[in-house]
Each structure stands twice: as C-alpha cells, then as structure tokens.
Image (cartoon, rainbow, N blue to C red):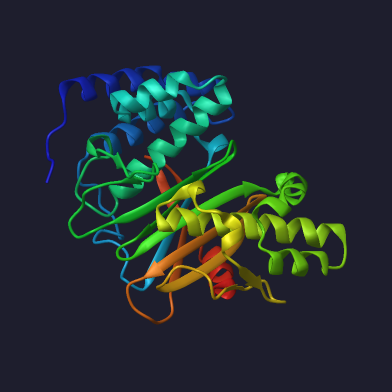
Length: 306
C-alpha cells in the first residue's frame, strides 16, 4: 500500500489552492474557490479516500463512471488534475493541439486515476500504467482490476470489472450521420441487410452509431482495438434496443449493453468469467470532487443487456 505523498505534490496542491480564488470569477459563489481547492487537495493527497466501492466490482458487476468535461473547468481543479499526471502523460497532454483536446485528455486521465483509487488503497497520483501490444492500458492490482476508457470532447467514460474483460466506447449522437456513411466499412453483410430494412434515415443513423460503439467496445474488451476486422463480427439489435451476440464472436460469456448519456451513445462489452446475469452500476462523477449514483442509467443499461 502506498502511504506517502511527495513534498512536490503538497506544494502543487497548495499552489492550486492559492489560485483557487480565480473561481470567484465563475458563476459559483464567492466562497466556492477556497472550498473547492480544499476538497481537491484533500482527495489528491489522501492515498486511501473512503469509498463504498473499495474492494472492486463483484464478478457479476460492471461499474461505469462518466464525467462531463465542462464540469471540470475550475482553475483549481485543472491544476490538481495536472499534478496527477506522470511525465509521459504530461508530455502527451502538451502535445495535443488546442485547448479542447488537451482538456479532454486531462479529464480522462484524472477520471481513471481517481476511479481506480476508489477500489484500491493507492493515491490517484501513484498509479502506473502499461499498455498491451495493441495499446490497451492496464495496471497491476491485487485482487485483479480491469478497466477501459473512452473519451470525447464533452464526455469521458470509464468502465471497471473485477474479473473477465471489459470494453467501453462513447460517441456523440451528432456523429451518427457520419458513422452511417461509413457503415459498409464496419458492418457485416447481415448487419447491412438489417440496417437497410429499417424505416427511415433517423432509425438507420441510430442503428449505425449503436453498432459502431458496440463493435468498438467488443474489440477493446478483446484487447485488440482496431486491429480486429469489425466486419467479421455480427451483432443483432432487438425491437426494444437490446443487443444480442452473433455466432462468430470470440468464445466466452459475453454481455453487451448500451445507453445514451448526455447526447452520447455509450456501449459496453464485458466477457465474464462465469455464466449468469450482469448487474450494472453507474456514477456521474467530477474527478477528485465526488460522484453521484445514477440508478436510472444503470436500469437502462440493464434493459438492453444481451
């Protein structure tokens, strides 16, 4: 267990708190700047924040955390997020062109670090990541902890399982038309037939976006990313929106689910260790500040599970 925090970290936290007064120019009250900086610093420096999720998801659970990037613009919060980054992450952060891309990357890194620390007694700053041959990020944790990320300019999501494999993908709903134009490149022949049979352009756009995110999540759960020929796997969508497995997917007990979150299609693919139903739990989060359970979204995910 990691229980120490560097003097550099405390210095950065104190600096963020000093600059927290900049929040007074936002829509928050005059008191929010110092208060926000205090909350951020407490969670940043505490290697063992109290968490109801400590211990990790059960083998029959998928946990989904999401954050709106616009909710994490406070100067003190941004400074605290930067203090979490490892040197390679900081270099990558600076390499992004444009503030929006840099902020998207920053919030996604803060989210995964903060979320993982809710399951293990490790401070958000101390996590060290490696990647597999196809670029999927992983961590060493005991008991095992598997996670996957997806990020968009306005939304970042992180899915966590305690056993098996997990993939998650998010795409803005307003990209549906673009995705539909690309459908022949990633849909299998049976999927293309089913798509063409749908009544109306809007239905076809929605189906193409759903299948794109499901296939992306499936490939990420396999750990192979876009190296998987997406046309080689077939999925079907029921009248109620549930997603079913084709006969040509990888071996294992697969669970697929999809939901719309703040104008984004979000889909999960989980390969469980054993058979049986999967329970979904969802939280809306602001990294380092807190999270709110969203049983409404969890229920919607569960209704589409296949």
